[in-house]
Length: 203
Image (tube, rainbow, N blue to C red; front, side, top):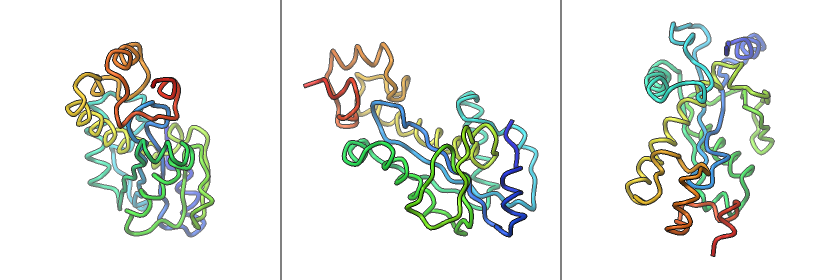
């Protein structure tokens, strides 16, 4: 289960504001990549911390309830988005970093140290630590994954209304059998990533 060990280690090195960062939607073929950033008050500990985990390991209902608590009791949080068009223009890794930078820019107070899930962001001048499977070991990163997942799911549910023939509410833009059938029947939408297979093979 995630802990605050990495956060407290940074805190002991005189970094008061330690932000966890994670992204959601990097592997989809439609919709944006969304990043979350969360800073907790490391002088406080809330009971709900024990329930925080990698967003993929939680039910939708649990993610939603935890997202509310994270936003209420964190010092600050931010959401950053990179659109499908941006992903096509600059590539998925740069777009993911851009979404993380945008999430960081929403934080007040500003972070002094970053804990990032599996990525480094040399483009931003803040001390940082990239943690492999960070959402499994850091509460701040896991919390960031939760608020990002809830935010992205809500976006895909809205896209479902704009594009009723694509079941975005169900598969959230991931490539599934139903999504493949929808593409064959209806073609590509403006929120599909044109540089991703199999979208790039559609005319």
